[in-house]
Image 1 (tube, helix red, strand yellow):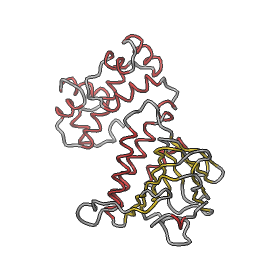
Image 2: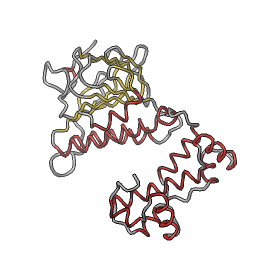
Image 3: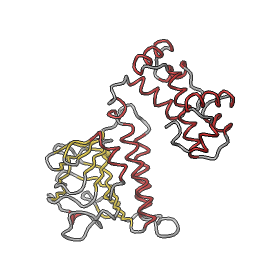
Image 4: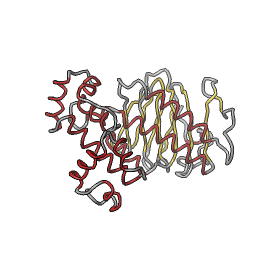
Amino acid sequence: MPVTVDGLPETAAPGDPGPPPGLVVVGRYDELPGYAVQRPRGADSWLFTWTVGGGGTLRQGRAETAAGAGDLVVLAPGTPHRYGVHQGARHWEFWWAHCGARPSWTAWLGPYARGDGLYVVTPDPSDDGSPARIEAAFRRMLADARRPGTGAPPATLSAEAGPAGERVAVAVAHGTTARELALCALEEVVLLTAGAAPATRTGTGVDPRVRRAQELIEADPGAPHTVRSLAAEVSLSPSRFAHLFTGELGRSPMRALHEARLHHAARLLESTDLSVERVAAASGFASPFHFNRVFRRRYGTPPGAYRAAGPMVGA
């Protein structure tokens, strides 16, 4: 039988469409067929759901999606929505959070918009590590939401009886520290899902093996990458990899690495007080003399002068 927001423990006063945007509420449910929540006016806050098992159906305005294990579904405020156990599913086990979204999150979720403020991020089946990290982030969010002003959160979770008699954990972050820590954990969830989903990695039209190599270079340009090591990461021969990379991006892998190292060095000069020698080493340049020469050729000024002038030089 459908329930309204009044059926959600500790989320809103009677008659409110959902928790206010300044409040962070997080919980984990495992619901049986017949469970549904309907808000004809939508909610004042964002709703994030991440499915652990079973299946759910979420409708936002005219947009609708089914949610399976690993799917992150996000509902923006202000649009009528309804969600519940998917027809034919035996249950729906999911984490959920109501809160005000940080501004950067909408850009990360943008590629996954389905219309009417509904965002659906499906997992990459080859990504074995993210689900465990996402689960851990939600558990940390639940604990941090219950953190008092000082000290650690209580050791025992508050809970209510679920439809099958199991205990259902829900927490409301009241204090500033609890809210910010809970939002940091949820931000990790958004990054892990949106950053690893196939739409992000292949939506550029670049061959996914080239994109993977590009990601490895961008993630750690100072590492001792070679054509051989990058090719091994994407299961290609060095010659095939170099040919494919150059054809896709218009520059060789080593040229891309060289440019990434110079860009990384420039960011370190702008944002740290590391010596030029340490910046060179951290960016993958074995010789400070060589680093000075190539940096000046790229940015038109030596590293020390670049730092003194500020980041506008060579932008």
